[in-house]
Image 1 (cartoon, helix red, strand yellow):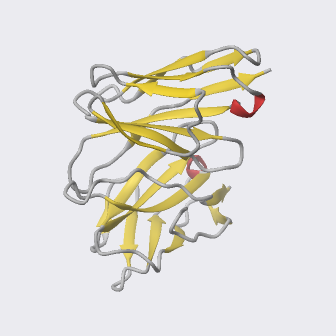
Image 2 (cartoon, rainbow over the protein chains, first blue to last red):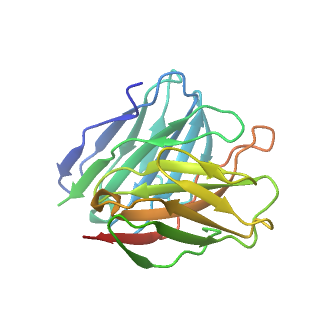
Length: 114
Length: 114
């Protein structure tokens, strides 16, 4: 069990550029979640997938954000025209759909917009 | 919004038990109590969860009151490495009702002191 893997771990980008983060969930996990966390705050839910279907999107997920999970395995989170307010840690998590399931998190991808 | 209330911070002497309280007075019958912790700059780490009964694993014990309106996470012998933010979360986790994403509050910052 290799755990949830995220790439890159750190990204510095200029304002206005696009960035993409990748998440590889735990093998066989059919649910995949994206969260965002800013300094001093708890993680905030952005969106989640069951297999390749995107089931829920938070109001935090503006039009500049798009997430995909094309084959129900890995997922990407793209931020277009980045703004300084997008600076945060982006967390990916995965779980297996069953009663009382556990959601496991990756180590996060840090984004700094300068 | 988070449906739990936790103290902002707590201290614990190394080697002693750390007892972290959580109030969830509006919990529903199909909601589980989950505990996660987050060590600085890392992704949240799953600790334990339960529905009605007390639970124990290699990391901690979870004590849920009979009316389920509050719970306590117990770290039996706290070490310096247990210094972290601890999150108590209530969550629907039954497939037929629709497993819901985790909603984090601000958590309790536990400082273990030598």
